[in-house]
Image (cartoon, rainbow, N blue to C red; front, side, top):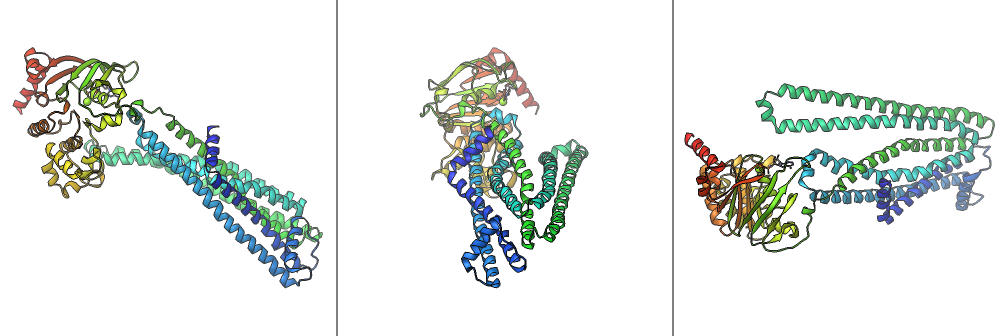
Length: 602
Ligand code: ADP
Ligand code: MG
């Protein structure tokens, strides 16, 4: 139902293209149908006992006579008949062009718009949607599923419209030529249709299965190559090869079954086609002998019979296009029906932030029924001050950062920035002014420069800002030593950075846009303490007056903060300055003592 509505809507929105396409298709089919008539006229003119023409043949004769007159001699009559046939063939060519051009154009437009809508929708879906989906699945939704819908919109209607006219028209003409013979000739055609209905779903099923196998093989191989080091380190090569072998064999078997079915199908087309000729030859000859059928009729009849092959094959094909398109459209609708994250949608107050942050009794439950990730967290941070959060893994530190950026919404409680509830602030505006370094930052396969400039608008100072930020992230010297400096490509097409370098690139990216609030989520874990010290000092200088939220495992990272929260199991268990917390002798003091001991030992 929804599929039908979508398809009709697509035609309605592009009604002019649809009309041109369908009308061209019908006109072309009409030309195709009348052409054999003129061949018949030519042949019959040559046979001495040519009889009176009936039906459409009478019309064709009328056309030719109108051109050459009643008394024209045989040669002129034949030339005129062939000329008319050629004219119809030329018209058929032109109509075919318009049919294909406009219907394919229409389907490409639908494809383009659908992809755009899906992509835009995906941008507004919450992060947890992506957590639950394999990116390969999303890719095939954007490619092969959209392609299936395109095939349903364009080619399917193309074949459907011509088939719907061609079949009855050709049959009707055949009936006027010779009713008995038509009855006999229909039998092989019905056989062809049945073969299509039998084989075509089988070919499709095995082809789909093979396609799925292939996707699994690619996904497996891709993971294997990406994780090649891990595979080797754990001596898993043999297992991986066996696994791929198993998938490969399944693929092979399905492909083979597909080939077997399409080979049988191809053979049956020949068999029924041959049977058709045989039937027409046998019964046609008898009809000719009985003078109920001319040689010209015989030729035309054979041509119509051949014209009817394709519609019989197209039945299966068009059905397949619709079934597949509907299934794909269903998946696409499921994606488009996913609720966008309200926190992601633009809208709300746009303002320049001063940088005051307040969490008021904030709790967060990720999945209903599970233990809260945060439980009644409250703190207030004046503009320009630095708040540090420490705590064991899983204590809820990153959740606080995500809440502040509105990447997720709290289950209860409220978050304020500059005294305004965070839901009322435009998320884009908020994020533009927040320099966020996530725990595992992602670098794009672009140049160092473009990666750092990710949050920048294009302006003249871009390069200057990138360099400045790299310096403040203690990354500048290393960038200079890369093969092409700031233009060095990263990732799959370029160099790989070390963990510490990646972290500093991410810090530079956050600093480059000169944010009002900086959020550093455990982003110094992969650099040594000396570099950390350098970064922190540079940071302190550059972010003087910038509100900073710094999340860390290491006490040394947070010691300088104005206030420190110690988080455990989603609750704030201690708060104070480095000094007061050490004096208190709680979790923080304990953590500090152990880390200093470890450092001394190292
Ligand atoms: P930390 O940064 O201190 O290690 P997190 O804030 O990442 O802690 O996580 C806090 C708790 O919330 C953990 O128990 C974690 O398993 C859970 N959690 C984090 N992210 C998600 C998520 N996207 N879905 C479900 N649970 C999550
Ligand atoms: Mg974390």
